Image (cartoon, rainbow, N blue to C red; front, side, top):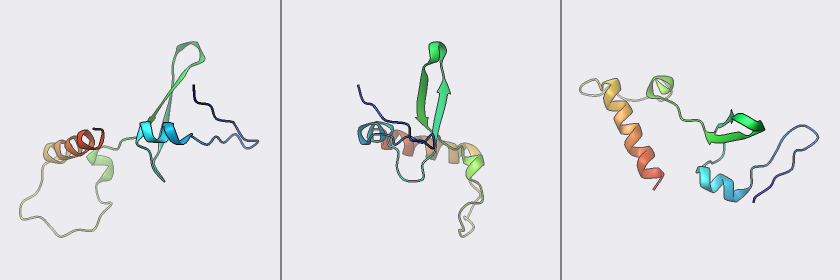
Length: 83
């Protein structure tokens, strides 16, 4: 069992081993999902391509990339990252 302590401000430091399991880094968002019996599941927040649109400056591609192609590329990178 891995534990953390809640500070007087209601903050908690996520232990290193848990951050490694979540593959969470600096500035990553953590999602708390309430479950039954007072339990909570935590996960990293994953954005869809639609939410990321316009964040980066780039040269216009030779041909537009479809939303499906963007989602496929994101899923491929996530799968590779989670190995």
